[in-house]
Image (tube, rainbow, N blue to C red; front, side):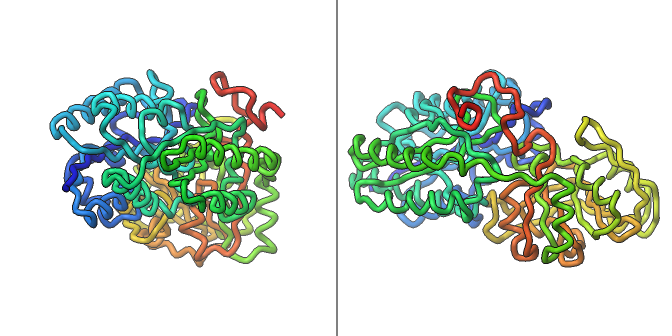
Length: 488
């Protein structure tokens, strides 16, 4: 028997501490795809959509891509933007009904001005449209803030297991295989959610390192039970002031809700008994720069307070200023500043000029003035074909200027915010990573997948900003209580 499967998603990681709203233009500058354009973009990508398509094609099932909209992480999605996305998605879904099942791609940390639990909201509307008899399976980002509504609106959700997220295609395959087994009457998945009274500090979420390494080893042990179909650990996204913010567990069992709950409770106990290990040590900027001297180079400095993958503005100048004060190390940094790009475009490659960068710092807006030489101006487009965090292939930085300081350090200026998930971001612009003492990447864990091959030393830097590592410094109004480490 052949089955017809719809595929759709609205995907965004929303930082409610960012003052600027995420609007339609941000999705247009990201990935706003309909119909076959979704297959063209993701069929061979290291992304969950590609994994889902692989399984459906292999199993001879018809997959019908509807709409997929994704924007670079940023502020809360405006009400008008979300309403337009939702209306378009539901209208496109209506056109292709009936279907036998649906594959969904929420992020799990989306927030709109009108609906704090945005993913739960749109998933519930898809459920209402399709009815209770049509199965809905999907994936979640490891950083999802999972709500009961997300779980009650779906049959099974599978989260990424690796951070950096280099297993996205595998998780799409896992979710699609679960759906196939259900459609063929081989399983009866039931899922349970436990929201933990814990928020995991962002710098402790690297899955190949402790404390996560042992946690996932234990989770794998629990998953070996033949009744357990899937087990997911959601680390949560601490930069969203919503009720569901924090870590959680989803367990999918084969027809046995008690077994799912029992397994989730075991994992909950394991985590809470080790809760202190999920609050990490934090290096300030002077300490991080001091560590460069004795470290194998190039050193990757992770600018945690300006994590573009968490909604950071990509223009924090604190580390740049510290390097310029010391004049000791040859560094590379990428800064989002469209005005600086336009300033550079007034010059020819090889010309020296006074560059003004307007960014953020410890006390708000900062202005950096540097004497630089223009190396090149490009259209800022590049591709990544290897498994990297996010699983995207095509990237757009907008008009991009590459300049060098008098000491030989390199600054790349972009017209669009771009997450530092690919070495091609540098190499495509004529920048060779091996030439530097230090490379600054505006992230926490995600850039490691791209830079580990060329940076033998990695240092997380506790910089200020809307993604600062110490979540207890933010003012929350809506989070659940008690929640460690806020309440001990």
